[in-house]
Amino acid sequence: MIWGFLAFLILLLLAGVPVAFSLGLAGLAGMYLLMGGTTAFAQVPIIAFKTLDDFVFSAIPLYVLMSQVLLSGKVGNDLYEVASKWLRHLPGGLGIATILACALFAAISGSSVATAVTIGAVAIPEMLSRDYDKRLVLGSVAAGGTLGILIPPSIPMILYGGITGESVGQLFMSGVMPGLLLTALFTGLVYWMARKKPTQPAASWQERWAALKHSVWGLLLPVIVVGGIYSGIFTPTEAAGVGTVYSLFITFCLYRTLTWRDLPTILRDTTKTTTMIIAIMVGAMLFGFMLTVLQIPQQLTEFMATLQANRWVIFIGINLLLLFLGCFLETISIMLITMPILYPIIQQLGFDPIWFNVVLVVNMELALITPPVGMNLFVIQGISPDTKMEEIVQGVLPFGILMALLIALLAVMPELATWLPQFTK
Image (cartoon, rainbow, N blue to C red; front, top):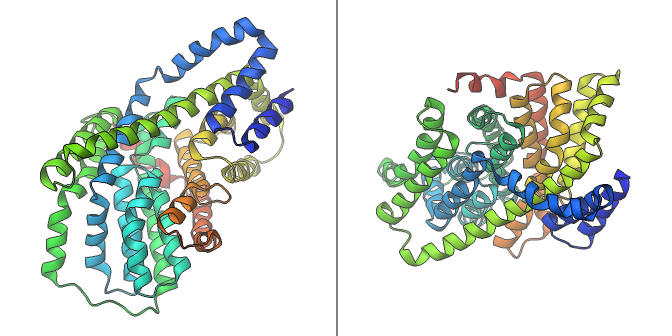
């Protein structure tokens, strides 16, 4: 019976029905057949309320709002300017500056799309004007943007915590070292591929310090948010509120890049993004409820327990499944569909849930640059309309290989993800 519901879900997705409604309709159809019409329809508002009745999820609209404020306030432009001034004289300096600017903005916004849009709008024309290889330019921005969901704060990690009950503070900390390592890998790749490009004249020390001084308020935001969580001053949800207020303060009062006229647009965009996330959450939970009624998670867990296969073979299979889903679904949908099933399985196999959070998020990074529906691919094409999709895909391929390498490193050295969280209060 489950195959019939899955086929119905795939048919809805292929027909162009939005992901949230595809999941909800498939789940509701299953509930109707299994429980009867009256009972099934009565469960819908209960499931929707229980899905959203979690204090952890209140951080999502706040982080989305913070991201929109920083995007509209052009804080990312200043970060790229700082990185460019300090690094442009190095071989591949502008490419390295792009990756580091992405990492810095990711640590501020927590959004991959916002990172790619903000940094890409400045970096792509600048690098192309300096005769950088177009595929490298497009790939570095698209892949650099994915750092937004690995380096805390991260909306996918909040979802993971809400679904599994794991500490969001520890989840955030688990992404710090892998995020820095992936940034270093990206930087090394850009350096290697652009090392023969003519270097740019070095900025004077006066220019460097002036750029750094101008951007210091934006650079303080990740220190406040992540430092406050790490030190126990406030929870991740409270950090979202603090970060939002701080981002409004620096963009309205210090940088003065925003005015009250910009606020309605920012709030509208925040509402649209938050509503999309919530709709997918409710749809996925309806589908997940149907799977629970069929006892699919329990049966899979029992099946895994009876297998004689090495747990790492199953781990590879899970990663291949996530890679496949990433070709067709976006990050939030994949997490909400798979986590109720995968979480008990990884516990049964003896894997650390905090560690697996990072593995999952790196897979979600791959989903952002995997055709045919990788979100960052379309974002880059949107800000560079004369670019062919084939060029973007070719550009992100080496970076995707490095993400796969990071997953392998996490399997060999789980301490990369588990060492820092143990110190979180």
